[in-house]
Image 1 (cartoon, one colour):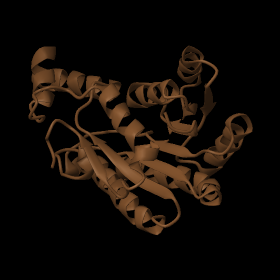
Image 2 (spheres, helix red, strand yellow):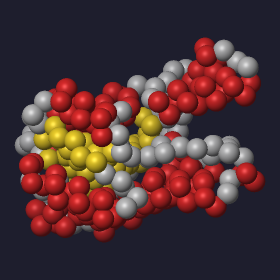
Image 3 (cartoon, helix red, strand yellow):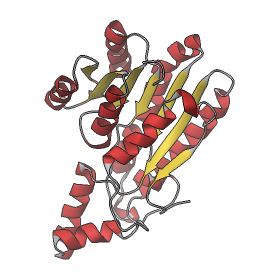
Image 4 (cartoon, one colour):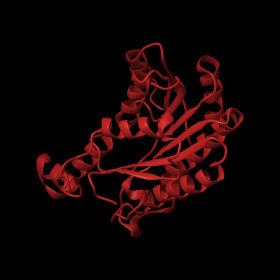
Length: 253
């Protein structure tokens, strides 16, 4: 195992974020999980043990991000691994996508990555070492109908990832994105419920509808996304930067 680091995972209370936090703790890292649901965060931190702490953070508000980062440093030191996982998905036909929905998708999915990355970067630059891993989506590298605002925001995350990777290439800091396909999380459970409500399909049929976009014919598991993040955070991934790594069973290549 490589050197133990301080990792911060946004949106760390459930789903992919919780799986990433668990994998990082298991690998020996000190982990700060952040999010909006204080009770859920506290419960997960307690379950993961002394190497995990939970802090409230609103990624769309820079003051909240800076405040949480200051608290995170007090216990575990400077953040060396940043996992920008906090995200939000909403679907609507393009002509029913209003400015408020667009702003919401951009603020959380892209603005959150911008705020958190700017906040942690000075410490990484000072140390000449860092790992920035953005949890994007296959919707960041291809289009899907009825999620134009979400897809635009996630495409923005990929653009930011690639540009920042070049800017930091000689600074000992890598910047990559992980792009999951449909993953077994609360967001996908909501999508399944939405399909059931609108089409009168059964849960199994709705699940199959989502899984069919994956050539493997299955939903991705959160732990599989966490494994990709763990690799990108490792010493062995030093030459990997500016990449959008799909975890999607061959859906995008």
